[in-house]
Image (cartoon, rainbow, N blue to C red; front, side, top):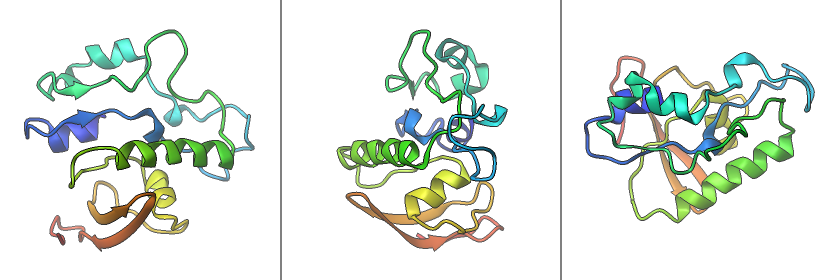
Length: 152
């Protein structure tokens, strides 16, 4: 959420937090059901809403998809491949129902690899990728270079 706010806050674009885009534990971290690594655990919704860094979106951060209540929106255990696939399918379905024709998706590198179905794809930190999305299929069109330039 913080990266999305830094990139998009103040642009007038809607910034929607989608829990299905949360980080995925690396395959070598542990078997499904084992304790989740700390960096893959989130913060309670109440703390996210109070975070001054996220307030920079000018109140435009949409948390409606992150369920309130005591149950965490992240997984406390390493998810199975099937669980991650179902989660990302739900995101793809949600995105295909959106009215926008151009969107920015901000997520972690492993999620990018899974959305593109490119397991060993190298994703440079904070580098934009341009993709075409047709239904559930994502096609990489261009990858920005590390100097901040890029395609379109």
